[in-house]
Image (cartoon, rainbow, N blue to C red; front, top):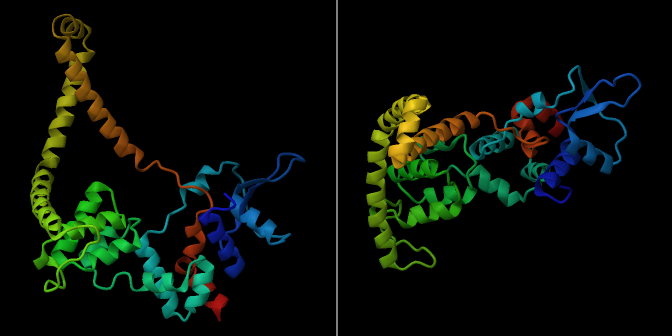
Length: 298
């Protein structure tokens, strides 16, 4: 943990702008020690910096779940807006780079990240963690192909630069911003790119067909699964199927389990807990506390 990028970023942020989010402690029981609920990484960094006193919030509850539940990770586009706003307010790029533990060129790239990206794509990806190089690939496409590529990324759950590069290779020449210049993708021949373009067109058509029927298909699956669950729950029917048609009973149970897994996955998306001391806590300090940012840098 002490050598991780996350730890170094928080350490640089604390050294540059101080602790923005106070540590949270619980009152001791009797003569026992105070319990640290939130801020273990920050405390470790402060000890390394030789600090002996730090402002804390005192909690009447000794459960850290509440604090971790309220940690929000900063999406890539949100980070872009944060950096742009900080630069507009006069924060030097060099000082911002030191606070975020990145190179000045990285700040400049994030500042210009959405240049050439259509508003619809920005809206689609605003809450996603997207690789910065992905926007470089999208910027080479026209607006409609950009939107289609973003929708495919969301469907695949893949926002990496390599996937965006593959989508660029599969984009028709006429759909590129510089359509008069041949595409140059390292490691791919023009014949391979032409084949990918055809496959991409077919994939897009299939995707739109599936998207149109997905809602009805899921509804039918839920209804059928509920009916089959009640059917299999009947001991007499289950015994009869097990004795005479075990393959049908196995198929019924497979359908029920698939529907149950889908429901569990949907419920679990809201239950994921982020880790304590996210680097974004310090990275987003300008966004949440503009008055503090102004005083820190003036």
